[in-house]
Image 1 (cartoon, rainbow, N blue to C red):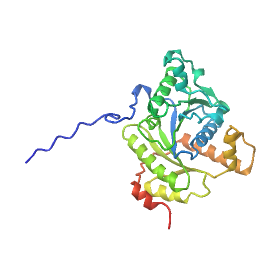
Image 2 (image 1 turned 30 degrees about the vertical axis):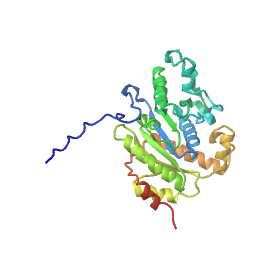
Image 3 (image 1 turned 135 degrees about the horizontal axis):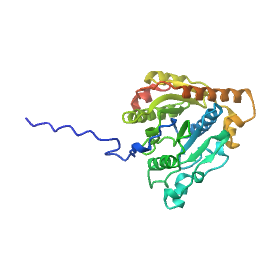
Image 4 (image 1 turned 135 degrees about the vertical axis):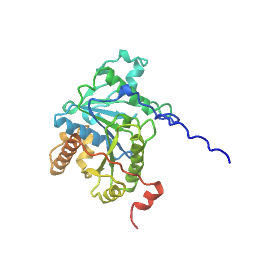
Length: 297
């Protein structure tokens, strides 16, 4: 009888794949760190920026890091498209020591500090490298030591090793989804990515933020089925859409009952996250399973 091959030796995170491994020296240990994921176009940047604003209004020192090559995560906070970390590194031929904090960090609404990591040209590099370089710069300039909350706003629909890199830094991961098939289907795959990273890092799933949705029945039904929780619900309020066009946060928009309700929900969510939400061990469905689960005949 042939002998069985011995089992392969366990590999460190990142070995045998194209994902980026975190240098333990680059961990963010001085702040509560959240990573915001979700389907492209679902409102992650709007959610992240208003959540940052809410944390700041609770008296917290906040840093928001945009992780999308479009570098449009923070413009409602800063009122402009700021240079990216990759842009400024390229301008000094990647000599980190020549950079000053004001070259890549910009103050926004109510003191929220904003950084756009940017990304390599399409098809030429790894977004995880960019996130790593951004955190390295922040640590080198001691900019994380006076920060209470860090929010990573992550490129939509991509959960490859590179763009899963913020999960290596985060304490809790949040998923933004609407009450529809496409965003819940995407959320299921993001939950799988978070679950995979949780095997090697401290990140844990916090829950789902329902956005641009009158109802939450499908989100809630899916959440109950896999062991997820809904943390907040933001309706499809036109003032939120207009705030992007006016390049400002919801807290700077004209008052109305709908706007005030959304503001209070952001403040409630910020308080909830600051106080700490229990970690979830949600078990994602297989693609065919969720395809059959969602919707109705």
